[in-house]
Image (tube, rainbow, N blue to C red; front, side):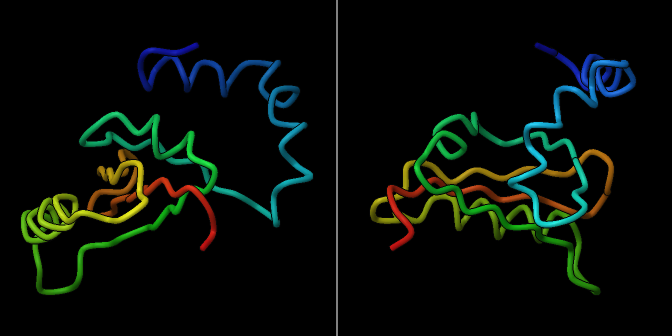
Length: 108
């Protein structure tokens, strides 16, 4: 369990990290990139839903992060029938990049 980015980086640098991710490999479709996101609200419901939609978003050329955050704030207030939660946040390692997560009860 980690409580900060530094705790997680220490885990990733440890000898046991490869052991921890080995069981994930059959479910991965090639290389993956791990990023850390500071979500605007607790993502537990979205990540714990039967289906989690994850979207990577970048600031459009000519726009600012403030423009993107305003748009995401507006979108997060829209009622999505069946969705358990809509959350988003900036990717710590990639300024100008955001991740959005929405929990759904099924793929339909």
